[in-house]
Image 1: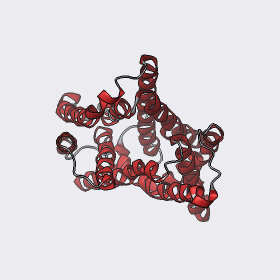
Image 2: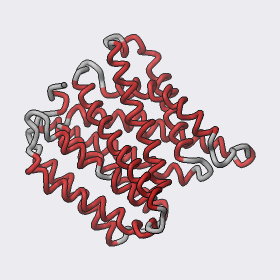
Image 3: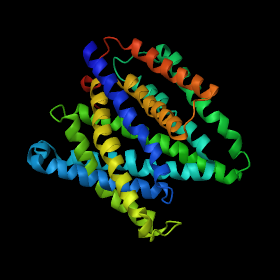
Image 4: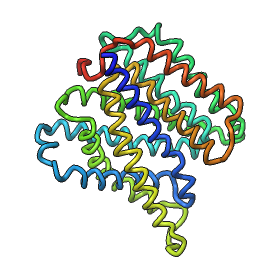
Length: 318
């Protein structure tokens, strides 16, 4: 059991390291919007996942019922398409800082939901860890909050509503994904990630139409390699963050109680910070050092509470 917890935490860290790279993608493709990047990433995810799954298609899909495909479809919508639409609108209307703070509360929300599962660690015991997570996220967002203070209050309100929509959407995905895998013990984490990618790729076509048709910039300058760079970044992010990163996340979700797997989302924030420091060639500021310390302490505290805890794959599904 202890080895399962340790392996699950390692999978969560690996997923966070790969997911954090997504935040560098906009820097590499400055002419493309967040919606265009999302459509490109998930379409590439679908194509790559399909190519990887085709040689074993009958083996992978043999035990799936119609309801499992429906589950994959709504998981793809809530965890990818709807989440990124809400997130992009939140950043545009309310600013990056308020949006990142609200969405950064994901580990807290998922952990609170997980505390309601049978046999889970009590919420009162998790409170210090959750408090440290909130402090860490707040320290990250606080320095930039004043920059958005002059925005129109209606845009701010709509942006905050979209941020809460993104928070709710991904929380629903995280809980639903954990319970879906608990119902399919014969399905490996990697195979579930491939099927998830195939469905997400098909859904990304729906996002691609408005994303590119309503793009503020028309990308017709081939000599500067705009589309080549976009394809390369989309493909790289799809392989690293989606195919491999999601497989690691599924591995963490299968091995860890939801009260601990929720805290693993913190590593996405931590690695995104580390990558941004490297990209900007700077050391973290004092508030960022304190934020990192608070987030690491939150995960460590939570992990210590779960020694000998029941893994997620053994939790009863509703």
